[in-house]
Length: 251
Length: 353
Image (cartoon, helix red, strand yellow):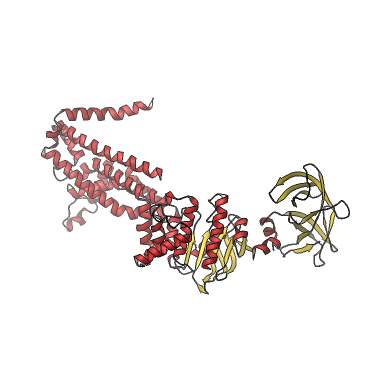
């Protein structure tokens, strides 16, 4: 019963947002150019970020799960760190590294690359905060596979790539899917690092969370409509996560 | 013709300064078509030895040869061996067919040949119609049968089995054991089977290698292992045994208040006397008869297991035919008919009365 207090704290504001948002002509607000642009940008950037997380994160997770090496715990802690780090710190760190006056800024400028306040910066911020969720979940998934599955494949004649692609990857499919969902929701909701490193330019770096933040000062109806979209999208993804986790428990 | 030789095979774990020797100078030869069991308690190094044959562990010394060719520098996926594990054997995301076809597909065999060989190997283990099922839809025994089929389909030179039936219940274990033996005989495949279950080893093996603490204790036929154990460990580990403290002097070994004849070669020194529970005969009281009080009688089908509390020798275990009348609490007199005298690390002397 005491726990219900927490549930009320979660649920009540969400219900009120939906109540207000849907009451105030939701369709017309969500179809404004600002809202649509933010929605489109959020979807595109978060999907690209997700792709980057999967492409680089899967081998990293596999390596961390299977190989024992010096400094392993350090590397694992490092990849977990952004989970608990305030996104603002990530924003500062990204600016200090890739900003115009950052550590790599002058070198990047020589190549004609300026990252801050671009869509690329949005993606970098999203990858920074979302990748750890993916790497961690996938790593635990790979690590949970009994070594006999792999050794059997080895005596059957499979090489390292065949073991990875035909045995380990399918066996870790559910945790990997969980990781994808977690990373995607995190990327969709990313705010702090984005606003510091990528700014808040409509159509370039103004993702849904940023549009909500800015919109709340100017036009709270658009903010409410976007909030409803985010709540629905993230809510559906989290529900999907529950389903995936339930299924893997049954196996 | 596939033969397997383990030559001075050694494996140590841990640091150089504080090594833990898992396998110490192991020498085992497995003949073509032979079924060899490596038997020992857990932690004796038997699985480590097998894993060195499969290539999962790198030997610290010595050699592993198949057909007189060293394979220690060969990666596991290139070795002509196949392996069946105790559990987590089948890949759960593949149907039975795909599990068995896995190695054949890697070898790029034509589809119809793969189909034929998968079907033939499934029929070999009596699961001809199971190709379309997922492992989760099979019982534990069926899963192990598929694992055996998958290992055999590659026509390995050496079949390795690491306690494949240990997770099954007793009845099923016996049945699968017999099936495996039949298949192995028909295919004349060379097999090494690791187990801690002596009954399994005694009933399956052409020869048994008994290991303890990383060392080979004895390598012999099951009947020899049972009748003439070479070391105290084997005498104690295989079958039931009454182990008694004795003292040899002048052609006689004293056990408690009893005197038994000892061969002239025995040195005058303490000895261990080993008597199998079935190597006794019930007698009248008199010269050389042992006696004690019966404390427990268990009927084990065709014979009885009887515990006897002897005043000078402690608790003894006897297997007696059912023709002998025994009752709890009664006195019984008996004589040993055969025993072994162990002195130091040497093979024992056998005495028949």
